[in-house]
Image (cartoon, rainbow, N blue to C red; front, side, top):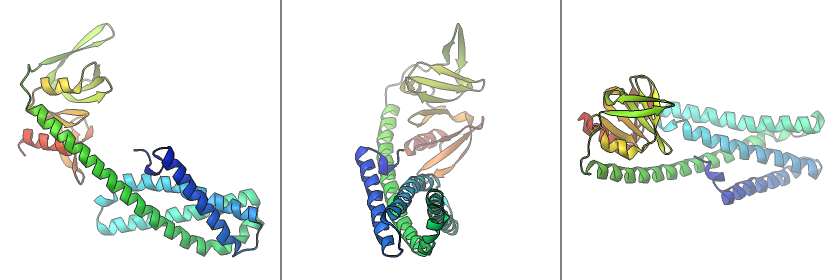
Length: 274
């Protein structure tokens, strides 16, 4: 997913403008605390504003994929606290290092008395930014849930469709050769643009066909569409475990791991009679 603060041109302009205003305000605050030329203060403000903007993008990525919600409460608080310390420490440390490189030790040293104030500003901005990321992530989850519900309706409609001929083998042309894939040898199928990747116990093959075709023509008591882009042979599943709050993860006999959608997991449970 694209970072929500720079997902389009308008959001990018807003995000850059936000940190530009912060840079200016930081420079004005510092001008009342230390005796230094305005251009030096503006440079310092620009460096720290740009750093916080860049670290904010990194923070979103870490918080989105860190799966903090799945951790025990005490572990979650430890991880979030450690992340805050790392985030603020990086902001202050990298900022000071850049000022030292650009302006030398004498000028950079004059900013050292501002470290406590910068730490306080960093904590406040971190709390605001992390809370905003949490809100955006929840909104994103809601959008995904709506999409999954639509997918569930589509899968249920497909399951109610008129029965068609069930295939026993699939012919795949590779160069001048034609491979005949027996249906029981298929581990899973994955959408790949206008093609489908067929993973078997012997290897994988590319077939110019649609997922809908295979969903309709493979035995529905053996093959389940666990995600809009994945069809799995249930006989190749070795383990099912919780992945997130509303999804499961399948571990196949070949070691491959696949995430299911809520609708796909419901269909899988129906086939496995769980």
